[in-house]
Image (cartoon, rainbow, N blue to C red; front, side, top):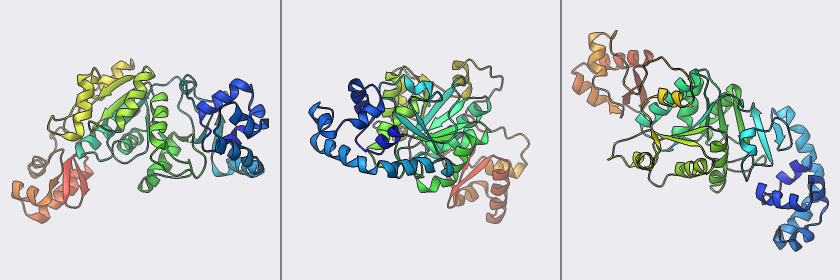
Length: 359
């Protein structure tokens, strides 16, 4: 309960609490020390010491909130609990506690982080989804941050593959960010789990996400980067992963595409270049017999006019007018064929009147 109370104090991160534990060997001892003494010891600044002492009057309120968690479907796991993830315990700044919806990743199953740009291209989204789906089908747990773009696509792919996926938040666990991912947020909690080290109600502040990223890499055995700019936030996760001794995989992109500059740079610096999910499965020692790579689907089985329309599509979205012009088919017929291709898994409607190929 004292750990929960400490978690409510914004400036008490794992490093500061670790310093406190060097003086007091248990959390009860930390609570019983006055804020002025923590200031005198150089652990807290003057205002922090005052805040620490004043926060004790809210201990009962914190206790009431703590006892309400179970009814809200939330677990509070401390570093002292047996179920606390072993992958995180080895971090020098391991969270003192975690909030959890769903379940934790299994320790004995391989885990892969899929990360990348929020402003991803259709190619990047399809690639992340494809890797997430195939790897999840083979038992790999997919870890990401539930963000827009590549993160969400990786989660979606894992769900399509019927596997387990886990989202790590940079805000309170009772907040879905971005809001448009609420449906995904719920499905991830059901298939795997949602985790956060931040107190309930903590807003998605920009400073939280670089801190959160160490948990994405920490819970993973390796990291896959799909589309990242030269100064992408994803590269912060890569740096943390390298410090943690994790392997880095990167999906190559066109040299003219700024959105792939970060990935291409990683490959140049020694990251593993991947062009199919099997490359990662081989790293994990998982036998993979399917000859699947990031190529378009086999057109065999499509009718003549379906092939005509499919040939007009690319991984980059194409406008309906261009598809009609290239195929020379009437607009109404072209739209019906596009719908059929969507239902068969060959095409994807990317919004507006744009369509693309599906991997």
